[in-house]
Length: 530
Image 1: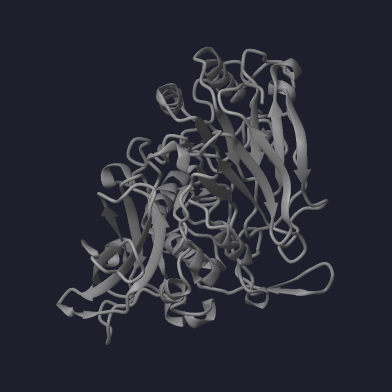
Image 2: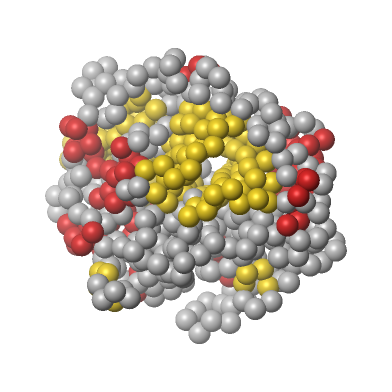
């Protein structure tokens, strides 16, 4: 992108100061156990690193976790020297938020690199401060010519594969960090709260996979503290902390943040759980989710009502890009054979569908990325007769949850909404599907692309079958040939999206850990069909 200003990556000094306060997960023995003590000797520490989210052209949200009650202070500057730094007074953080806290930043310069440092102060003696933790990020551009580049993937610490110190932990995060994207879209399954880890697993070839273990990862999560421990687990990895100190995040959730294939109102038939009401589990997970990611919670609440626990939102990233972050979990109907002829709830719920249609129609961005936590035309079963995603394998006219997607696709066509594409993860392989009405049973829509990438740190699985209702053509796929292939046996996958500031062309690259680019597709603005 020739007119994009050169913005250097954070210097070695910043990275070392900011995200490698401790060199590896094993160096956090106090953090692995229970919640921090309320009275400790010494000064507050932030060994879990820093994160930034909710980044716009002029604002951002900075996150940190303390080892005790502390006052959060943030300083920002345009250089690593922190000359002429601005100071932001954050909240007093304590046990009510599991010692996590966020501080909003406002009035930032658009399209610029911002350096920041977080200092934790003893609330009883402000002179007693801990060692600052450093990070950096870029604000969204105000000018179209600056362009945009971001990464996406999902599925972290699933199927028994956690942080393995023998292979350097979650190495793919370091590979993504070196690409220095504007932000990272995490497409759900950010944790596997329903997936306990074992200390070791013997692979088919005789090698042994070792997991870093914590108390909360030894059983399924049920209590608030157990959910908190699951979100905390990935921060034990030094690659994740280093990545978070440089790359802002846009995070959505799916099922494994709560329990596999859950839906509202579900009562569990699972002997591992003493709490059977999924709505109660989901409310606890939602609270922990908002505590451990820099995402603003609507109305500051984490209740079970759709309005108070709303996860879906629009992320505006300059004139070239809007990201519509969906929640295909919290408002869906129950999993079923998915062949009903009338379905107003679907996978989004009526209110979220109205929001999405209105937001797409109002968007003035050249590209409109629909960030879905589940794919559209891939058949994802839930047991022998039910289905978990949109498709159910019937290639005919829309049925069940397909009816809601058909309504959305029809709306996009008739309102002449251009520049839409769908990004997702969930199925643990990478692929590209092109949807076209000439191949479809339902024909009243404009052609579009759907790109799948993942997992980041979980088991790999064979490719899912396609459902012909919306006419998908699998143009590319890379997937294992058996279920639950470990990260030691198969590469992890992530995707890259780059929008050129001059032409506004959008390039999608599907990438494999250590293997470079597997597939590339260039899309032109203002066109349908691509």
